Image 1 (cartoon, helix red, strand yellow):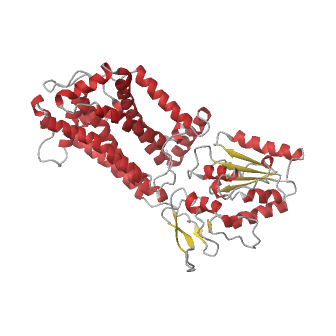
Image 2 (cartoon, rainbow, N blue to C red; image 1 turned 120 degrees about the horizontal axis):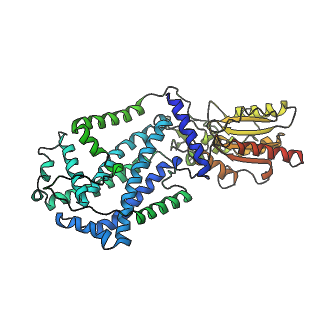
Image 3 (cartoon, rainbow, N blue to C red; image 1 turned 90 degrees about the horizontal axis):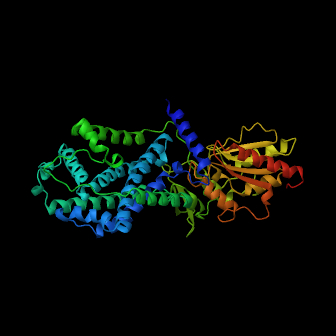
Length: 503
């Protein structure tokens, strides 16, 4: 099956779930934020667990077991939340990686974010598996011995690590303290790596929407109460661990190593990581134009800097040499070619009295001047009042609706649209205006819908002027299976025009 077909199937799945999870709360569209939430639960619950944990070999099992038996409503519940959050962290992270791969979010301006996310997978596995060692029950014994045998296959240590688990006498407090250090230190590396992973993303979403957040926390809490995590019998190195209640979500790598043996397992792991790195390094098939700054029209107002979703724009001293004046500078390797910066530029208003509308920053493949010229030509040539639909090329197709009284423009992103174009179209004779973006929470460039909504509400510059009546335009953020929302918006504007409620 071709990559495009797989991508369409995934998008249809996400569109279908929008009916169940409205308002941008679709879990598949928030996998990264869900993973951050699970990681936060792990860190917070882990603080309490470490406070009551006995780091000695003799006291480790007793201290962990006491959490469930002696204080089940505090320690036991937190212990269960810790385990289930670890499972959720693993699931959401893997699904997040798969989603980004399928949607092609691993090259060009997303390349560095993808590459910095790959090492986090290794940290996640080490942290997840290492947590079972500290329980030091029969399952922890299996995890420790199997991990040691797997590590022995690597030419990293002078002596065999698995020799430390040949007998109870071989496992001393010093070794156990090392295991504790690993389980505490690696999550700190993971936290730092996550910070680095998000550096090229403006205003990253680290928590899911409130409704999804409450639902996840409630579900985890109920699960921790209904199915509490209980320790197995204490570790006994004189006996091989068999018939264990294996956590396949976190420990699936160890049975795989038992099945394949250590060396083939490492070869498989290395191959997976090599592919993940290679897919990001593959050059893009099409080089998209990047935003262009016009020095004569850029005054360094910072709006494009604030609105860029991928931190691709910075300010430098203006080449005109005037003291204190700055100009926007675009980093080509970070530019998403979305045009959100053009929609933020104050000079992009179509009401300017110039023959050619040149704004401070613009997209060469879809300039604001071209949009203004096309809009004027359409309204001047129309025999009947036209409803103007500004859409997104990643959302509903508004250019091919097949409606005689609707003219659509598919923009690079709905965030490219300066709000003043709505008033301009109405003054030029449009019967109404539709602003159509991607489904809520599904903006291809993350912030296009958000900034557009805030600009229309007057919460962000440039804003839509208050003299534009709300009856004259409609905002539709819908997926491909929610076309009825667009149809309803068109019919509403038609009804307004028929009853005399129009510009």
